[in-house]
Amino acid sequence: MLRELLVGGVVSLVTITIHALVTTIVVRVAQTSSVKRVTHPSLFLIRIMIPTVSVFMVAHTVEVFIWALAYWFVEAAPPGADLVYFAFVNFATLGYGDIVPVERWVLLGPITAMNGWLLFGWSTACIFEVLHRALVRSGVPNG
Image 1 (cartoon, rainbow, N blue to C red):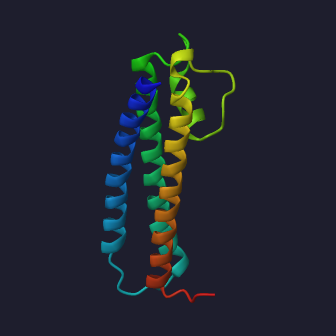
Image 2 (image 1 turned 30 degrees about the vertical axis):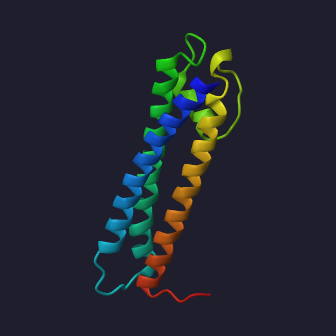
């Protein structure tokens, strides 16, 4: 169990670090995007939100691949299992379906799910903050 917690903790720290870097970049770009006058608020919001959400989607995909690499390294799934699929299922908290971890690595699934849940929430908070700031900058009235 200690080995599972250690591996899960290290991989979680790696994905958290990636997410922190991505968040820093997204926030910095969103803050520095220049707006002189917004004539079409809807187009302005689309121009801000599509890249923001896309960057977070790419970040989550990279994080899933890191989990898949960890599963491969420790041989957490049965031989021949699709590790990327297995990592996506765990990270997105879908639950087990056709692939289950080998006995000695059963805790990696819940640790992956906890990490994914945390990072999805983090992304959601950032997306809404970027949206809020874009709405304020575009002059769209509240309410």
